Image: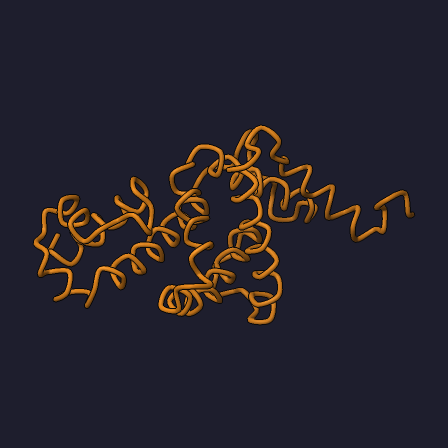
Length: 199
C-alpha cells in the first residue's frame, strides 16, 4: 500500500481505538507508519482524513453484513414471507451489532458530532442516499442496481433510522435488545393496528 492507503487504514484503526474526536494527527501517523506531512498532501487535513475513515469504515461494515452467512438457520428462500426475510436479515445485523462494540461506539460518537461539524455532516450527507440503497439491497437480497430509486429513498431511510436506533440502544441496554422476530412482530402489529389493544 502507498501512504494514502496506509493513512486511511491508520485512521480507521484510530477511529475504533480512540474515537473520532480524540484521534490526533500524530495518532494516525503512529498507526499508519506514514509521516505527518503526508496527511496534508493526500487528504488536505486530519479532519478530512477522519471523515473519509468514517465513511470507509461504514461502507466496509455494510458490505461485510451483506456477505455474512445468515444467523442461526439458513436464510429464508427468496420467495419467503417478507416479514420472515425481514426478521432473518435483522438477526444478521443484530449479531454484528452485539459483537462489534468499538465500531458501534465510533458510529454513535460521530452522530453526536454532526450538529456542530458542518464538514462531517456534509461528507456523510453525500453518501447517505447510497447507504440507504445498499440497506434496501441487503434486506431484499438483491443487487443494489435493482433497487428502485423511490424505494431506496423511503425504505432506505426507514432501515437507516432503525439501524441507528438499534446501535444506540445496544450501547445503553445491550441485554435488552430485540431479535429480528421481535422487530418483524412490531412491524406487523403497527401495520395491522394491533397496538395498545386496538384491532
